[in-house]
Amino acid sequence: MARGLAGVKNLVGISVWCQTGGWHGFRRPAFLEDERRDIWIRLNVQAATAILCDGATVEQVVREAAGPGRADATLELLRHSDTVVRELVYIEEFARRKLSFRRVRIPPLLHL
Image (cartoon, rainbow, N blue to C red):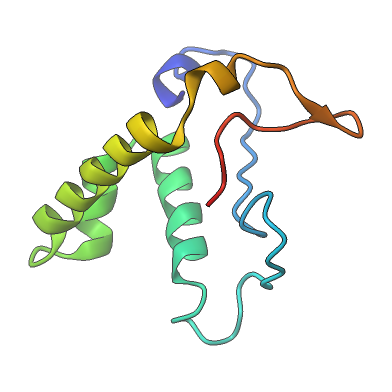
């Protein structure tokens, strides 16, 4: 998405939805005072900002966030996670259907 938007002249900004965790019913407040509890939200916001606003790559973001000792293992974990999402969680036949609930489109990715 970042590459596709790179040449757009009238792009004003971005919106990142990292606050609530998505469509599930688990009501967890974002940006809690204990940094250990909201680490994934913070990482998502930092990664989205670095990639979409600063032109960073995923590898650069991971290396900065994980540090030199854990960057390679973290990148490998993310690659395996991507495979799980693409081959097990994302169901293309379901994604092609346009489903809505109260005029809001249901996303094609199942939330576990």
